[in-house]
Image (cartoon, rainbow, N blue to C red; front, side):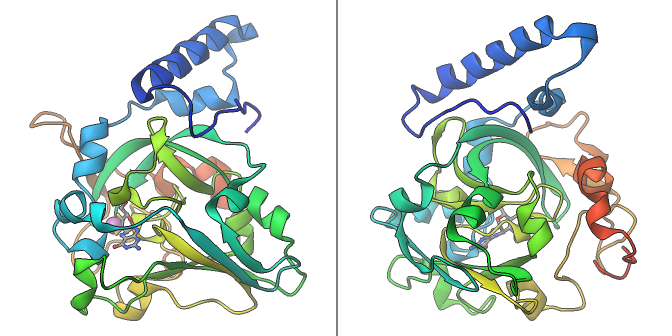
Length: 298
Ligand SMILES: Nc1nc2c(c(=O)[nH]1)N[C@H]1C(S)=C(S)[C@@H](COP(=O)(O)O)O[C@H]1N2
Ligand SMILES: [Mo]
């Protein structure tokens, strides 16, 4: 992950920002010797979904279970001010404002494949910083083995939480080495704009090699813990959703195949494609799971 342009939340208009980045990267490719692409260019074989697609087809059950509910209701969420509690096995626990939490972080663009366990997918140009930067800042203590995350729970702002579809608040977790991996992003925006509320404003996790439900939205608590933390979908249905939930085309969901995915926005032609091991990030992440039976640790 060598190429880190210093972008801020206020960077110009979203479209021109985005076009400029692509032009810059195309230029970099032209200059690179021996046809060798800079690391950031590897993500550019990917053709992102449109802003409209990314912000109108969402899963955010706190605002309803329909794909269009988050776009309709997430405006009710107050995201400023926002604070995040960091606690557990850390040197600098506390309640961090959004500004304090993101202070000093290198914000960059990451164009990632995004694969929902429901077998649809998109490509999303996120803006954010590596979670490992934040973990470094708060100081992970030696006993910590997992990172637990929690979403805001605000019945007065979230019309979906009156339904017990899952247990609220939404919680997720990663093993510490997964959390430290350079692909693991704390996303604060997309297409160069602040994070849209339906996508998990003001800050959400993005773990591109795992099914989408691991990428928890609107985070209010990050805890460094010793034991594997409970996770929402695993609690709701442990037979169908595991803690690891790495994208794996060879392990079917008990009720549907995971071998292929429906590409959102692809239209009636070329609307399905083969799902890739670790969602296409096998080379970068497979070593995290050496010795684990990937069909068992779903
Ligand atoms: N708090 C919270 N986070 C969540 C969810 C949710 O319902 N609540 N849905 C998850 C699921 S199933 C998916 S596929 C992604 C969807 O992210 P997107 O709407 O930005 O595409 O968010 C994940 N994070
Ligand atoms: Mo999902």
